[in-house]
Image (cartoon, rainbow, N blue to C red; front, side):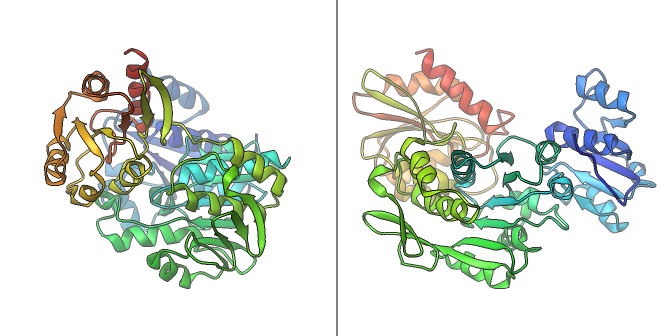
Amino acid sequence: MKHLLHFPYQNVLVLGLAKSGTAAAHLLLDSGVSVVINDLQAEENDQNVADLRQKGAEFILGSHPISALEHMGLVVKNPGIPYDNEMVQEAMNKGIPVITEVELAGLIHEGSIVAITGSNGKTTTTTLIHEMLQASGALAEIAGNIGKVSCEVARSTTQDTTMIIEMSSFQLLGISSFRPRISVLLNVYEAHLDYHKTLENYQKAKAAIFSNQTKKDYLVYNADQPVVVDLVQEAEATLVPFSTTDRVDGGWLDEEYVYVKDEPVVSREGIALVGAHNLENIIAAVVTAKLEGASNKAIKHVLSSFSGVDHRLQLIKQKDDRMFYNDSKATNILATSKALTSFNQPIILLAGGLDRGNTFDELVPYLNNVKAMVLFGQTAEKLAEAGKKAGVPRILFADDVSKAVPVAYQHSREKDVILLSPACASWDQYRTFEQRGDMFVQAVHSL
């Protein structure tokens, strides 16, 4: 397991434990750094606390005292903690750098890094690139927002390993020198404004993915989206566009093939992944994998067998001629709207979750094929208003996603699609969107 070499900080505050904080603390302690861990939720009898304390970590649990910043040279912040948090604000006022753990991953990984961000499609694109490289015989590890902590994965990589990292805007705000060989900017839509406060701040956070790149590096970007085209004008990296509508000097398609420049790489007939919205993800993945050395044979093989990732338009089962799809990763309106356009059959939509203050008027045009909505969580009433505006025939309510499933089934008919696509984050009722999706899957199998 690799350690940090020539690390300039002797005293580090890890703010927020969870998976990322735990991994960062282990790396720092193993590297001989003095670590204080501050967490509101952790308990003294937690196994993670015991393990880290045995290694020499100090703990401050249950509160965020400003005094914890004394003598600290660096703060490693859990990505979910906002920058208006009092501890974070005070650290920045004192001139103490505040980073996220992915910055540590960049310091210890010696090989190539491919970093992917965007409002939607990150997980699918990241997974495709990883599988394409692995199918080509390359050493490749997947990490980041996809569930594997980057600095933990990086401890076991070599200079021949490519790390493919899915990156959220929360993580990107905490980088300083992190520099991918290839960055991928899929799209930027309005999201997470409760965290970033303004759309401009959110866009700047996404643009940080290429902030340290040079001409030797590559930036794969969505040439169909004007806001992305504007953002990449500031990049120093070599620009590689992709498009689903135009022929560009990068990745594009026609009715028959997906191309990289003038080369037809894969037939569209041979692609298993459904949904028009996935074409952007597929083209971006093909271009990026080719830049990183993947073979056409491997790319074709992956695209012929890859049908999606867990919790993203995942077909769970067919029961009594109804199709059940788990799209729990649809945590915003755009993701749900794209899911709704993937089906021609009547849909019963299960939706709801954390209230971030927005309305759901933008979802109204996509509800025309929805025969019923089963709503739950903090946003249930707001989604009901959108359903009424769209003329959805039946609007129903449930306590949670588990109880929504039998309600949806009861009101379904043959050929219907029963779709969990919440259009909201899960944190009002569930720890993660994965937990929400797992509860849906369990409820479907319990019918």
